[in-house]
Length: 338
Image (cartoon, rainbow, N blue to C red; front, side):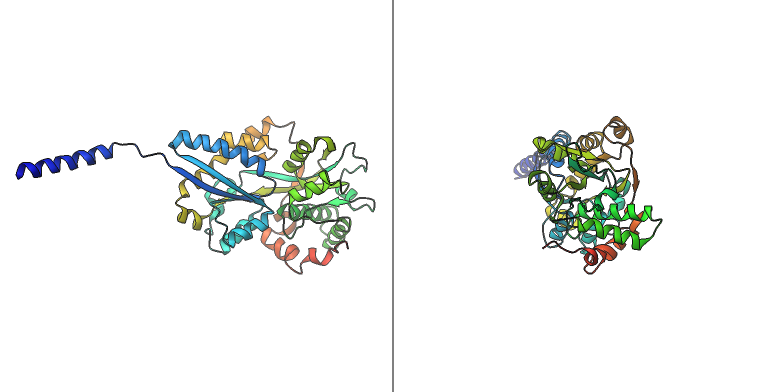
């Protein structure tokens, strides 16, 4: 009997010892990146790069699904139940919405470098080849013979940045006179024939449908439009002054805990700050935070005087309440074309 018990114990110990030294089986991991609508191509390339990096590092296979639409619309979808593991937005206000819904903590912005902003952009003008209307600065957008395409500031971060860029230019020119800024932006939107819900829709309206003399959009979307519509002969004009578009990211704590994906979701965003991630951002016409990599693209990223949302509107929370909330300044000045 004793020999039998000894044999059983020996077998169990051998099994435990064997299992302790076995490498963990590789896993298949899926995460969802909910982003705004002009980052599709960037994240398609980035997802492949990250998957290769993660496979080499851990042996696990990670598949990243993408969801794209207007930034604010996407944030609302996540708040309403779209189970994003990570969000990569174009303004902090959209991620703050998730904090108010208790999906992420109050300190979300401090968990990654640069207030969780791995790259930036700015608002530029896209015009027809040869710039037949001679559009070079913001004042040109309020001329009576100019048709301007801008996405809706109520649904699009692209549209909000464009609106605030015009507002900031007018404030700067009028030395802080808000009435003059209001009048300027009202004239500009009087020249807007249609408001698409997001930046990609606005690009299609301008480049594919041929509506408008100038498109206001992010620098990266402008470059992509030139690539996607080569026969339309589009030209990018960088105005002498514009707005700094900061593009924050966050993992969604409520969802990653339920999905058991916190480790990979966090690594996915941290990889944006790596040399490889920053290089990919630069290649896709986002301005990387890594100054050494940015310097390598000096011929692509021309110098421009940039002001921030805080400079011209007191930050996103105040901008939302003053300009974009129902009954705010945008609602007061915009008259839809019938």
